[in-house]
Amino acid sequence: MRLLFCGFAALTLLLTSLADAQEAATPATQPQETAIAAPQLEGLRLVLPADLWVVPGRELNLYFDNLVLARDLRSLVFDVDCTKGRQDEERWRFTPAETDVGDYELVLRVLDAQMQPLTEGKSALHVVPASAGAGTSFTLLCVGDSLTNASIYPQELWALFGMEGEAKLKLIGTHHPIAAMPPEVVHEGYGGWAWQTFCTRWTEGTDPKARSPFLTLVDGKPTLDFAKYCQTNSEGKAPDFITVLLGCNDTFGAQEATIETTIDTMFGYADTLLAEFRRVGPQTRIGLLLLPPPAATQDAFGTNYNCGQTRWQYRRNQHRVVERMIAKFGGREAEGIWLLPAHVNLDTVNNYPTVTGPANARSQVQVARLNNGVHPSADGYRQIADTIYCWLKAQLAAKPAAPQ
Image (cartoon, rainbow, N blue to C red):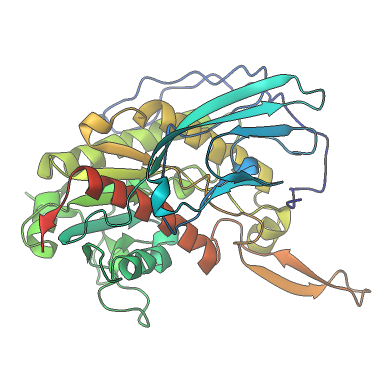
């Protein structure tokens, strides 16, 4: 049984209504999304993605706690209907063989303790050949915040595509924050950054965090200029692929009354940055990572934020971001935009950092507690890399990159 936040509290299936969304305070030049009304909920909010990708030899997981917004899973029954994989207590998992290559349907049903249906969803499961992309090369730009700045998932992608028989990957970027990592592991990931930061930050100085790498001065005014970025860092060509993992800092401090307008503002800047990527690289394929969930317990948030934030509030914010991202960006593959289901494949119990210490000041009992709220352990980052890797392999299979 997986650890659950705040012990085993009574299951909360009904959430309080969010305040009416107010007009977002985005700049006048920002494209505006039509606000999606906050849900008046009569049940669970399932965020099962439309597509799942996996490659033979890689494990794909659906962690049930990451898919519904519930404080306690003990009163819920999860029923996975799929000809592939196996269902465990806390997850469905599948590590395919080459003989499994193909497409399958996965249905997830959630029932109550009396086996009455509460909600269900379907995903298309795509098992991609391990040989996809062999003999080709491609470029990838990873954009993000501290989860990218840690550099572990870009390094893992570089290592996976460095294996024999793989497509050749070149990472694009100006930032190499971890000196111990190979010099090829570069990206544009900066701790504390948001969509807005990449669109607006411009200050003088040599610190790489002083200004957005995608901005340049035009008539004395900082202006998004991804073409210049590509001229300097990508041989004048737009990357074949861009992944974006942002949203944590955009929405971290939101509350129930502000989460909708906060997401509206975030999407305004997202539209602006994505439009600039698309202007310069009309053939670039963009993967937006659905925001990963936080560590499984309040202990992690107490370690990082004392009384400044609760795990449950952040979890509610993160879940709403995923819902809104699915509504806004889902089904836009024809525009070169895909949603990458990083939220389903991350083990929030075992793949976040822990620290061991006394249970209390008068106890000799040593207990392990999660101690980082939003930053996974190295193993968790590698699960994020698996999600990106399998999507890239599917893209290479469908539309090969350039020959080596």
